[in-house]
Length: 313
Image (cartoon, rainbow, N blue to C red; front, top):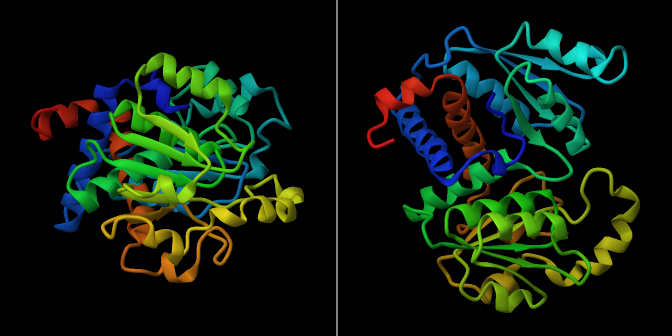
């Protein structure tokens, strides 16, 4: 059974197919085309964390493709009222796939271990694969291609950075993390990336202005993620020199685009002048969550449609 717990669950050709399908569906939607590719399919959204983009983009996306969705919050008792085996296997009797947004990556691994239905990681503490899919679609939309582009992530080497480093390695893109000492990406994660994709163009540096000097896209995220609230004051001090602001953008090419996975703390990791600037693709990026995930859902649940409708895939 095919799951997407991280982008390690697909190979580069499969990743390219997902992305091309997302682009195809995005272009079709712009012309008013909403093919019923997932007619009568039911998608469950099992969420332990709050969400705007992940929840609404999946629910809207599957609806546009002719399917339906169920939002499952705390009231369903996941991990509380019954054994994980019973919960998961019963859920698999009712739905065609589940998107899980969990506090711990181990939770989505456990959910997938029963092979009751395809499981998609909607965000965990380790990685955020659906976000990375949307980010690459945004770079493609801005530049016409993502091939050879340089993505610079400014800030904490967090779950989003993990997925971006991996997707860049898979697509032969350059990835640079500019972060303070001690906030690099997880060592074990990076060993997996380097083993799977030797020679990947990935750097972790301290000098943020040097990092962005030839950037195609400059990306940032909140300095304090969910669950790290007790560290907020200390993190504001540590990351003070890693704000994406007008001064930093002046050190980058004028063609560089700005990305943020949202929600943003305006005036902290990014300033209003940058997030609202002509260089910002942040709203387009949020919109691409839906297009990328539609590509993923069709690839998982109706691959025959891709073979019949998207040339060259």
